[in-house]
Image (spheres, rainbow, N blue to C red):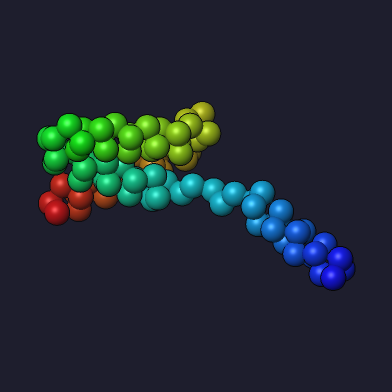
Length: 87
């Protein structure tokens, strides 16, 4: 039984510790979700937008110093925004 626990724990730690990188497209889609939430002007809606913007900022923090990533994000954001605003 102990032999079974070790491989299971190793797999758990490998998958738990490996973060997938955020793509510019995912960040742009997240920003679109925040814009969709902004249509609700209630107190709850405003709080949801604030939380969404905070989440987006936290997601993108590690990429702020990467000019190539930020360029791709801006391109994706402009493309996604056209679709997002029309919905």
